[in-house]
Image: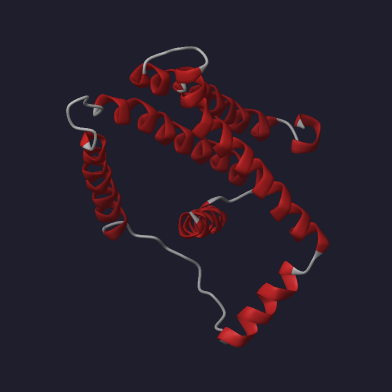
Length: 179
């Protein structure tokens, strides 16, 4: 879980950094980030729909075949990025020591620590609910295992829709007013 969490954080920071290169303005950056978050939620919806499709009462490990589909999709994305041409602006060369010192200077700022705590709490709450919801649907609402997982899609679609709409709103209204 720790490796997955660290990998997820690295990917999120990488995407955020790449958006900084692609987006011209702060408004475009926020809008694009909202869209990417929406697509991320649609990926979660994909998981909640596809995994139950592979449930098999005679083979309890049949759901593992979903990972073959995911590996194929990752391969397609890799090919897409491999043949894409990204024109990044030249970066001033600095030493690893300087980069590390700059990073640690940022990490000790109270606002950064507060952001990290809030981001952690938000993700933990969101993932907790998403992980727990199918079990709740199955044990409390008495839905069968397959339907319990599929019904969790409603929450994911709602979050994806909200993030997509937020992308439009942030483009038109300052985020302080929006919040």
